Image (cartoon, rainbow over all chains, first blue to last red; front, side, top):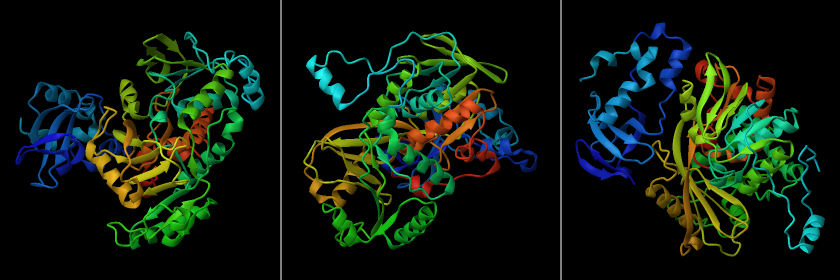
Length: 119
Length: 424
């Protein structure tokens, strides 16, 4: 079982949380300029790495707040827990964020999130 | 016997058992060779599980392509083919799914004879139970849809269920009482290792090279055309590359910049110590998340839903197993003193619409067969059959066409969460 440190409530068992999948997917704002393929990337294509993964979790049976974690999908080691609207600070997290193919998609580049993330 | 390829196999039969018993069974041939990889192949299949081996077998036997390699990272049947709970059925809601799973079930019915390998296919019936009024109504809607597609399916009342499965608890006072269920009599189980071994032996008899302990490090391609693969046993060249690697599909797709709508999740199962026969069918429940059957060895085989997070660790979280066992004991109080023998996990590739991907890609000669999620085993023959045709003819047939990758762009999703959400 994973032990996850909720940034608001502290260390709890995995059973209190729900996983929301890949983090840092921003909704495109220039909707009309996107092709079906680019929409499909936003809606369905998901980063599914064997290794470091940035993902969203929500403390369903606790404070019900969302947050992000940096986790290794092979060892299940959690490197960092960080709040929504920020980007990871650990080395593993920063490299994964920067190298994700999603940063290069048109959907992502036309999104509001690009300028909104607090460094 | 159908197996008449260039590496003709000795036929498995009562006669051959008697003949070999005279020599203390020391003269049986190897079921398949351990070939040295060649430099060039007409087709390379990556992934030596059931689907990959079936694809190679049908490519050789139906489409006449003989220069084929199957590349397997570990050993034959050591991945999800040997980790599933062996359930076979075809009672899916939508026409597209019904077509492919029923195609598969029809192939299962003849597979032991075709492969000359006893896959222990047992049509013991698959009974899905409902625990609420709403679920029962939704179930009858599904049953009618399934019957319209010509697939057998019958609604049973709690009394009929009790008669069919005497060990089950139909007491209305339990947390999730049984309100009814539906039965596919032609469904059942098969010995999963035997499926992999049978296909491997049959494919090998047509000259297919099965290369084990060989991991693909990279996919070689120029701009939009596949050239081959780089593996731990050297480079191999081909113009047609089929990738059938289940949970690792995203890892290989990533090497050529293809983004799949697939998430890899752990799926857990367990078996109990062997006991006398108490259950001669397969029981599944979507509402309480578990399915159970009894193997020929007497072990109770239990499975549940996928874990909620992505993982490649081949193990899941304990609460999922705990939930599954609690559900099993409530439905079968007789199991409460039973001890667990083994417990394991496999990595399944789940799709947003719970339907598989059998598709060409933007790279010429690169094909993907993945996204089977929690229910790929039952589709093994059908999946291999249509994937072989896709590779051989470079165009999908009517069965595989709806499962193309472009459904995520044109919106023609095949939403099978109702039929495939939990129980496989």
